[in-house]
Length: 282
Ligand SMILES: Cc1cc2nc3c(=O)[nH]c(=O)nc-3n(C[C@H](O)[C@H](O)[C@H](O)COP(=O)(O)OP(=O)(O)OC[C@H]3O[C@@H](n4cnc5c(N)ncnc54)[C@H](O)[C@@H]3O)c2cc1C
View (cartoon, helix red, strand yellow):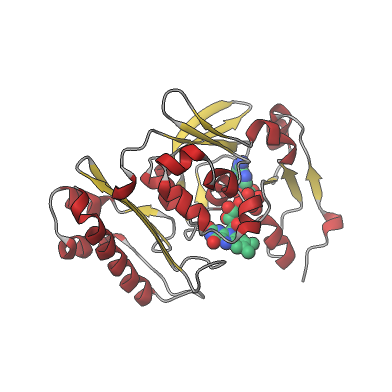
């Protein structure tokens, strides 16, 4: 059964202050950025909410990808995948993000959907989140009470749960200057087909003498960094030893897209592929 849209209340703030006031004053308000998740819920009548907040009127404030003088990069809440994917600084410095934006949905989704919506949605299969974790991304969360900066690795508290409070909005993703050269990075999405497929397993990783990052999607209730495996690799563990540890850090499940067993096999293959590819870059 479809949702009767005539029964919905949609607020369309024209300023950031108005948006934040609505967040404070209207209970149960669901923000809409690109709407590529939210409208699917409405179509399926899965989502019981009746009050929505279209952020479109804030595009002048929040649709940007900005390279800052201090070497950080800001991705505004309304920047789309296409804005990110084709940005020259992102292409030069953050190749994992370019690749994850490239394989998210198809062009229609990339022209509307936002990486911030991908994060806020909280799916463990989100394709940009592993890349952003490798880059130590932070999120700016804003409310009328003020602004705070939260590490993306601390944002998720469980399956589709996060630390955001009901009066807050994510306003920006902040990326520090990159630690890794492009050749030291690897991205892999495994789905049913090349495009328009939700990931069965998704991986972003990087390795240099300075450190190791392994971020995985669809292997646990949230996207994860495999911190123990990273530490073992940093201390010289080989691929087999790393896999022994990784197996204990992941908790894949059987669901409509795949089986836990298949996901484990794919995770092992990707780990070995990553380590082989990067063996000569240290
Ligand atoms: C055909 C199709 C293919 C898809 N393929 C993929 C894929 O390959 N990989 C993938 O990862 N996803 C995929 N998706 C899912 C979706 O496109 C992404 O998750 C997208 O990033 C959502 O962004 P959005 O701006 O459209 O979010 P919206 O639908 O607007 O919102 C998603 C969630 O984020 C919240 N939100 C949005 N902005 C903010 C904000 N500023 N502050 C706080 N909360 C906010 C909303 O309230 C909602 O809970 C697909 C969807 C469709 C329909």
